[in-house]
Each structure stands twice: as C-alpha cells, then as structure tokens.
Image (cartoon, rainbow, N blue to C red):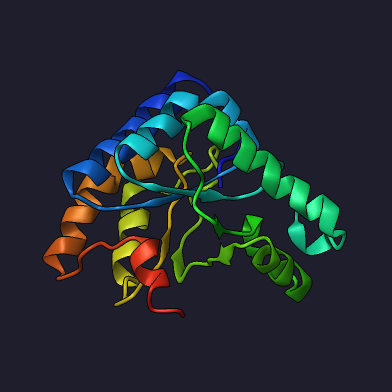
Amino acid sequence: DQPRSRGLGDVYKRQAILDALKKHDAPATFFVVGHFLESAPEMVKRMVEDGHTVGNHTYHHYDMSKISDPAVFRKEMDDVRTLFRETTGTEMAMYYRPPQGKYSETNLQMAKDLGYSTFFWSLAYVDWNVDAQPSHEEAFSKLTGRIHPGAVVLLHNTSKTNGEILDELLTKWEEMGYHFASLDDLSLIHI
C-alpha cells in the first residue's frame, strides 16, 4: 500500500528500502496505486531498473470487495497499468493485491478474467500508519519472531521504520537461514 506521501523524507526512506534490497540481492514486488505513480515516478522507474516486479494495487485504493461492476473494477486496474506503462515504458506484471486485503469472490474472478494472479501475504505488521510508526524493537520482534519458510512478507514503503531497519532485518533473516525469492518464483508453484 502506498498512502499519500509526506515529503522529502519519504524519498529517503524509499531509497533506503531499495538500497537494502539491492545490497542483499532481494527481489521484491511493489504493489502500486495511482497516487504513488503520480507522486514518485522516479522511484517507480528505479524499482524497474533494479529488477523488482511491480504489480497492481488499484488506482484509488478503494475497498474492492464493494465493487461488483466489472467496468468499474477494470477501470481501477487499467488506469494503474496505463500510467505505469507511460511512466516506465514497460508493462506491469499481471499481479494484483487487493487494498487492505479486502476482496470478494467476485473480485477475485474479475481479476482472473483480466489476466491477473492475486496475491496476499502471510506476514505483516502495523507499519502503514505514518503518524504512529512502530519502534525498531517492535518491528524486529514481529518480523523475526513470525518469519517462516515460504513467507510472503508485506512491508509498506511509506514506513519510516522499514526504511531504517530493512538492511539489518534482511541480514538477520539471512543469518536465520532464509533466502529471498520473487513472486515470479512463487507463482511457478501455483499456490
């Protein structure tokens, strides 16, 4: 998720996240919304240049479980894809993550009909509230204590804490015996 940015500090924490991922050769999938594509096009370009996958998180970050009209659903998805293509000159991965994890079976089918694979996560913590960021200790406790084989970890790039701890966190996970793979690798398993 990418809520509205708060200024120059956001650029630095996002750069730190991308720098840490690069240092650890950790592929990531960034699910972007329309506002993020509009406000941080250079960051999106770097995501692509660094070899990360960029997927669809809808244009407006609506509760998609309340949308039953296929045309409205398609517009939310297509508007992000179009802006991504215009911004990067490349095609967006056909990966979808419903905002807030809210969905309906109808939504999942509409995404599938549009050619998307839908992804959820198995490990997340409350990191999205920019006004109430977790401490480093809280983040480490939750992210190292609940890591597991095959984990799909959801971290928000708007989190100041994530930007500050990611390099150390990736190092810790490596020390615990974990390695990093992309959703492309996971999707080959057909979960």
